[in-house]
Length: 79
Image (cartoon, rainbow, N blue to C red; front, side, top):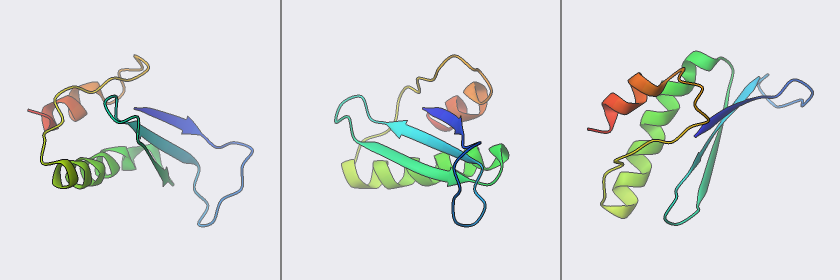
């Protein structure tokens, strides 16, 4: 998981950030665009529901770039 800044990229709806989730097992990548960083938790909930419904498995661990911005919030949703 990582959040990127889209400083020099124009997007529809004035999105300024993107959040990327990569499944280590399948290497499948999900990308969501955000207007604000505080939308990251809602996008993670959306991603979590989608993946768990498709695979019938629970997300157990979240890896990030050690930014620790959302580590506690996201980790609580996985247990």
